[in-house]
Length: 617
Image (cartoon, rainbow, N blue to C red):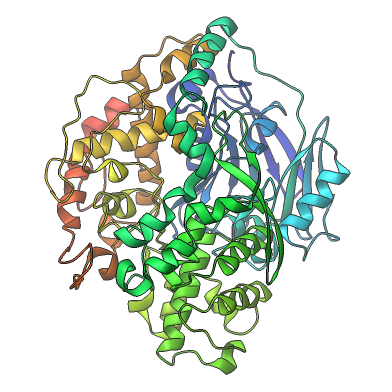
């Protein structure tokens, strides 16, 4: 086989067994790599109804198919599992250098089964070892990674901190000293298995069908993505995701004061300016790029804050929004240090920010008091934000409740109105009242509450570009129109499945359409077409959806909170008077996907067309 190893690794921590499994080439032709391969394996090997934090759950780490072959902006890896946070199909995406390194170990995916009795880590190099991690248990994710990378020179590491060990449903898995597999509660799954870390150092490379053609196409892409020649690439290189922070806080994009405030009024221009991209990049020490990325949209910074020196990854937009405007916090020291703590400890910064906002509203309404946490928790108090992160990491008292995410905490505190989530997943720092089709993504994707899950939300009001060329002319769609968007949303959503399965960064869409099919054929020797790729994406999306349906979940259970929907609408500001017609958007998307709006089931025709008959329960 070309372009793939045709092997995956099954590691059962209950009996400490390691098994190599052969995978037929036909599987890759149907599901590619990344979470395409992940959903194929997990769906077939996981019984419905299992406890996500029990021995029967499976945690997969699956590099994108282009990992390790130097295709530009295609070095990302996926984690896949049943989410303990939402009870749905769970996945998370990460850059850094871990994906290509895992691929070079000679496996297209690694799937962790069972539970270890004692803390362990897995070392994959010339041999595969399951080793004692008792000396690492209780250490932060950063401390763990630093220790293991110094012990195994040249290796890459994924690890959890105390939040994952404590089974916090808002914990993440960390790599590259600040890159996060952040969403879906994957850190808690790793913690439940007593798996502290995976250390990988690879030496193997896949066979390439036509290396000259692959290099030629990749070099053409490099030219297109060169920051010295392309203005978009130049902007991303300079600012990364934080570049539009000030604009987003004032335009209505960034949620303010736990989704009930208005940026231009409640946060204000002075605070927005204080945490702007221009202010943030003043701390840059050097640019940072993930594996295979010519754009290098990250940076390593050094900032002397009043809490201590931060030497790590530059603040990203989600951290800036969730620790900034969402909390009415315009204190850049607090935001930068809080972001660094989330990375050190192993918290999903999106869910972390929402939990703190939820807690601030509880405090404001007398549902938690100073004696419960040991300090005042007021809107806009940057010092209190840092104290709250430390409090949560200690996992004492009511922190144990808050660490389970806002949905479960709201049940305990009888405060559902304050909890902004979809089916347990805290919403990110993009308000769908500003980008309406994000509402479709938040409630209709099999991983709810995710802005990166695919769709037309970020293209609304402008010309939609496909991720790769297909025979369809996208219409220009009015931002606040609720008709005519379903097919476009479905196409981009299905193309995003291909993007993830191949290992492309979401920001590669800046340069789309990209020659996915030419790259794939040069790598593998297959004779795929763009239509074939689109069908693969649709097959992956349908199987992710079937996973949820097999768990007994129905479309009506995924609801957008009133504040995110615009109920009641704002009376002033840029989003004045806007209430989203989410039902119409979702119905059109379901119709385009041929999913029944009541049951969620794909049509018989669609199941047969995608060859999914064997997966119907």
